Image 1 (cartoon, helix red, strand yellow):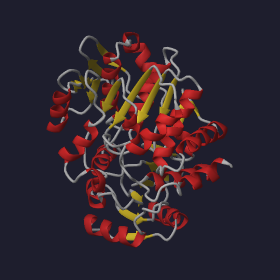
Image 2 (cartoon, helix red, strand yellow):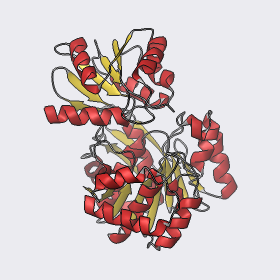
Image 3 (cartoon, one colour):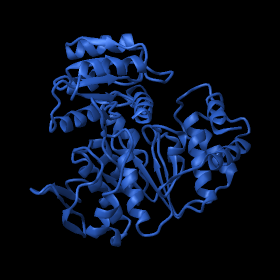
Length: 418
């Protein structure tokens, strides 16, 4: 079968799109008899996981380490989820891994994400990956990634998201994310604001908690560069990461703290850090697409991400900003709209390209109630683009946000058109 056929088939292997729990993955993993990479790193958190994985991978690759990364969801193609160093896995590599998982599954119902996680591990096994960096899909404690014990872990931050699955308050969600911790294993918490549950769980199991603002810290210099202080190392002047957004320096600081915890001292030299973090690009994260109007794509899909997006937009000329928004049904629509309400002049709602997408009419109603502005209902992405261009006019800007399932399809279509 072609990869597209496999991906459609994966959706039929489980009666549930999301079903948290490790029993199924552990059972199949035991039958696959995969060799474990020499180093496994887990990356969890509400926002910033993809950026942190990319930074870690770039730094570790700088010392000649073969790095495998597993992330989700993808923006354009499924292959983006599984990478060996800078290269996305080929269709053939993924199909071979899928076949290996299927032969070991023997009727066990795996979700789409669980099947993909096992396939990523099979790709890494086939290519003798030295270091595997695994991004947690949802939560941590019961996520498929947590079936592999890590040698180090990074939790970027904790805020409200996936409340239907993880809990409706910060401490409940923090408990789920703390589940990736292991006794005597270093875990970096990369936000200066730490939920009490994180510290409590680390103390209870004896994890080596490395806390932002306590064990390491960072400052932004007057010239735009930044300084980092770790437990044994420091740098006075580092170039900002190439990834756009004010929060990326915080993400980078957490990554350096994890590198220090792994005793990879050579990777903390300023020239190595600048080279590794200065050439990164992630599609759909504060990504500008030139044109008239100009397009800005960002996958902010929870209140904290929308707040960070609004702060970044606050440094630019956003007069007349038009927003195309699509969201999934487990997201806090009002929490995403509120931080952007003072910046966006015109709203357009679309149905995200997912079975869990909120219908455009319902999304528009909720956006309008929160923003206290009219919101256009677009029956298709094409009609949303037409309306956005009309609203923005010459010299305007259009923001596309709310979900990977809107940002990806629109970014792909507009990039091809340009």
